[in-house]
Length: 172
Image (cartoon, rainbow, N blue to C red; front, side, top):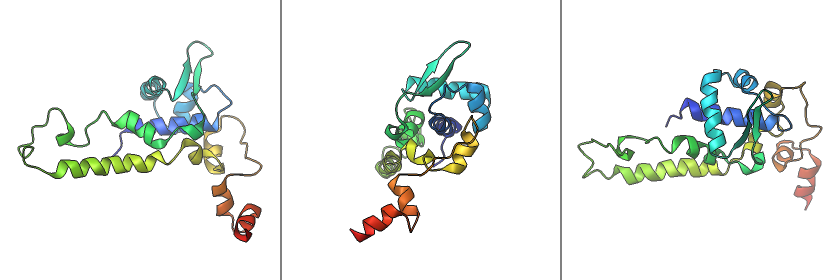
């Protein structure tokens, strides 16, 4: 399976917004940070706005920001918004001209596989991609690098073998 460039840019743009959650993000800044042309990114931003992932503000001091908390935006939801209109392969297309279509039993298996792909990504949230990720924050932060004083997520605690949260959990 290969994702479109638009889907890739959509996720990068949302990550940029999540890192800069207290700012109104400008298209120029996002394009530079995610390595995209402004014209291509404009299409992605438009779709992200239509799908309710971001709120856009037009005008001289315009820009965009997340429409809701990063912890409520699943990667699967984003991928579906950008990929679901594209047929995975010819048998999913309304213009299917495959000579085997009347007798091929592969379509339901492929359909299940594609849904399993999206379902696995439904469990991953935008917040998980950016929180406690100092390297990503250093790359995407529009201001001087700000590092969280302490990561308080369970995943961060689990990653540190001698963390107090992990020691308490192990003792209990």
